[in-house]
Each structure stands twice: as C-alpha cells, then as structure tokens.
Image (cartoon, rainbow, N blue to C red; front, side, top):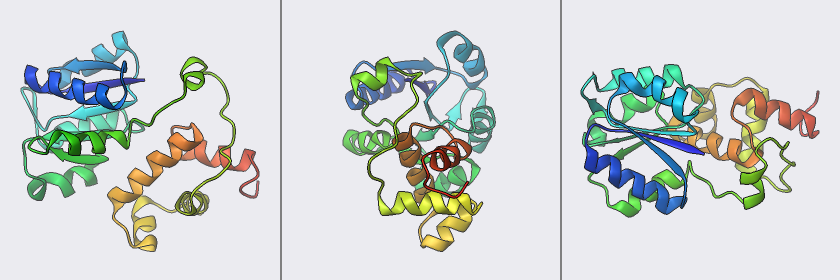
Length: 202
C-alpha cells in the first residue's frame, strides 16, 4: 500500500509520514511538494491507495487542488490536511470529492484516528498475496448490509445520506470501510462481489 503526502512544507511532510507509519508501520509513504509532479511521481512510485493533500501549494490553492486530485484518482480516498479552519472549507472540500478534512492544528492522536479509517490493518497473508481473490467476509455489520442493498438500488451518496439521516461524508467513510472489508476498490466491484457470493439477486 502506498500513501502520497502532498504538502510544500518539508516538516509537515515528515510529520504526516511519521503519523501514517504509526498507524501502519513500514507503509510506503511518498512525499510530494507540488501538485504538478504528482502524476509523474505516481508513474515512478506506483498507484496510490491514499492521498493526503494540503489546500495551499505553490501551484494550486483551495478547491482547485481537490478537484484536480479527485479527477485523476476518483477511487482513491482523499484526506485534506490543512491549516484552514474546517468551518471555512470542510463542506466545500467534501462536496468536491474529499473523504475527510483534518486541520493541522489537531492533536496528533486526532489526525491518527482520521487516517486509521483509510489505513485498515492487513494480515501478513493479505499483504503477501495481493492477487488472490478475497474470501467472503463471515459477517457484515447491519450498516454494511444496508449499503450493499442501496448500491443495488443505484442510489447516490446524497440519496443514501438522506435515507439514513447521516452526512454524505459519513456515507463515504462507510463505503471505504465496506470496500476494505470486501477487498474491492469501487461500487461496481462491491456489487459484483455481493452477487458472486449470493447476497443479491443476479
């Protein structure tokens, strides 16, 4: 698993790298100082499974960076880690495609908890056999079962949020947890997995 940390401040890149590796020791973390070198860096270092993005970079500012990263990597969880207050930018960033908004002023433990949502622990067997077809989980939570049924209905994140009386951000977090649980990367793969395992009508 590879995490990209996009921030123009060297100390912040180093700090985020340390926090990510506290969640998952030994994880590959790739620091990036500017957004315009992200694609070339990914070509050299491999595809991302998580991206941490600052809103203020030398070559982009605010939502433009969020839109750019989400457009290039729509299925990769995007965590905003920035000095801007959540009251000013959080809602707009989540609407633009970010999955989580963290202020740099947060205590390290709060940032770690946020990152942990998108960095689930894996067993050594899972790490060493990435090409294997995942076995069906023996048990899903009630919420995860609801999400699968709503996926089958073709509901959007907004529709699901309204139906469950939760925020769209919470819906996104639930989906990423479900995807990790199933070992898939998208809605389409989750539905295929569910049908293959007899959880839905074919």
